[in-house]
Image (cartoon, helix red, strand yellow):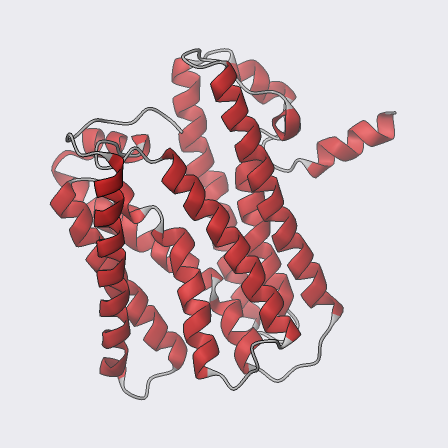
Length: 301
C-alpha cells in the first residue's frame, strides 16, 4: 500500500467501528429503499438500493473527510446482492451452479476485504489516489469524490454482478462454461492472494527502501493482483455467457478498461515519479497478462 495521509488521532479499532456503523446504516437504507420502486424489475430495484447505500457511505466519507471509507464497499456489496437475489429465487441453497458462484464470490470478498482491513491505517489514513485528487481537484473535489470515487465504481461492480441474476433466475442446463467460469474466477482470486503475499513479504524485507518487486508472479506481470481481479469478473461472466443477453459482456469489458486505462496507468505514473528505475522493469516485464510470460518460459526450457 502506498503512503497515507494523517488526518486525526483516532486509532484503528475505533475507526473500524465507525466503518461498521456506516455499512450497517448503508445496508439498512438500501433494504428499506427497495419498496419505493414498487413493481419494477428486481435488477432496477437492486440498482436503486445500491446507489442509496453508496450515498450513505459518501456522507460518512464527507463527515470524517476520508474517502477510503468507501473502499471495502467494492468487495462487500456483491455478497449482499447475491444473498438478496437468492432469497427472492426459488432455488435450493445446494443447487450446484448457484452454490459454486456464491462460494467464488465469498472467497473473493473475504480476500479483498481482509486485505483492506489489514492495510488501512484507520481514520488517520487515506488512499494516496484520493489525496492526489484532493490536491489537484481543488473546489471540484467533492464532485470527483462522489462521481469518481464512489458512484462510478458502484455502477461498474453492479454491472459485473448481473450474472448473479441469470444464474439464479433463468432456466438452464448445466454446461461446461459454468465450470470454466468458476475455474477462471477461482484462479483470479488465487493470483491475488499469492501476489499480495509476495508483495507483503517484499515490503517487510525492504522496509523503508524504494525497491521494485521482481520475484514470484511479479516477475511475469507488473500487476498480477489486478490481472487476478480482471480474471475474477470475466469468470463470472463466462459462467452465464450462453444463457444471458449479449450486452452482459459489456460489464467485464468496462471493468477491464477501467483497470487498463485508468487505475494501472495512474499507479505506474506515481511509481515512475519516485522510482526512475521502474522504467527498466516496464521494458522487460509484461504489463498485465502473466500466463504469456509463463508459457514462454516453459517453451524455452
